[in-house]
Image (cartoon, rainbow, N blue to C red; front, top):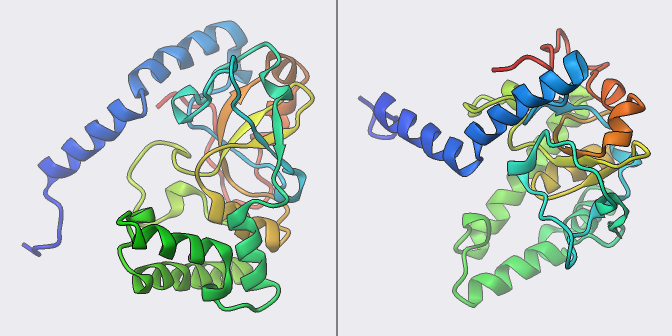
Length: 241
């Protein structure tokens, strides 16, 4: 056996650990309750949605008194005024850095994200698993390749189309919450995938559903966002699996 291969037992253990961390069992109960309440239009945890990247201009801003809305809350229907708490993402460090590289032609060394990561490494940290400047530059050279492949393809791959993806639905994609008026608010994770889709001005990008406001669900915004116009034979997003 290849020393770098993963045994079935280790793979199963890894998947179980990820399921526990993601609160999959709690999400499964939520999925069934959502289906009972909302029928076929129900949101499902970790389901894929397909917003237009350039329409996403703000992030959800967690502040005192507001809930933390991570991936564990994916598929939750949540009322209240949480969706009014927003930050403009114009000056997001990763987005700015990717624009400098792919629009202005800057070297990665010149970008704020690489400078920030190298500074963190100097303080003994390992951002994104990088432990040296060479690790950081290798990571971003790989992003250059993904950017060019996406430009040629004309769309971002869904998570389940990636060769190393062995999880459920769209888990791990850019997390997006849906506000009462249908506005999509970016949340944690998938920042570089979002930057690629945004800079290329793709018609849509695959994202992981976060939480959705009940008014948005009632108005049919999820029905609109759950449909992909670009992916060939996209799976039905409401399947409980």
